[in-house]
Image (cartoon, rainbow, N blue to C red; front, side):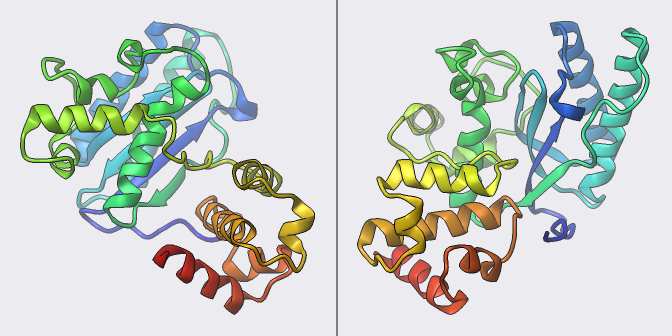
Length: 261
């Protein structure tokens, strides 16, 4: 298991927190309001920025841009404050959240947009709603609707879609709802879930992936598995290569070729 990425001022991070034992961390909209208040207070106190978020039933996602203070201080501040209020309200004791929060360093604009899309599509993928604009516990309406006043910092990401605000919003909406665009894996995914998803996407089998088959589909599937498994912090390149019965150097070369094609 890799350690969490180090803090660096100005870097973007995907932060995610899940309920202990996958329990619900919100029981009603009042709870979501309370959580949001805790988040806004912590972000202001530690001078960090939120560029996207989504509050689900048993977990949350945030796209942070770090300030001078480490992200973990902001997360610890709002999660502890909220857990205390939640337990008091429902007369509960013990941990509300599952261990420490998860955190992924965002590496480049393409990765940033993939994570943004993943965060915003959570309610859609969970079949909670069919129009993302109607899901108010997400930053998606902040991006899609120019008149909505939220705490999300939208200007940086919108500029990646163009200098004209209206055109940028339309491009972001199209990018988000396009079902043909590949969706990144859930950050809590297991090895088997990643392999199964690769087999589905690339129409191959586990036996072919671990065998001598070198066709383009299998090669792409192996590269996709490596990227997803490493992103989920399941293990290193060597760890993935061993499970696919490949050498680390061969898998690494394959990934470079796949990116260039």
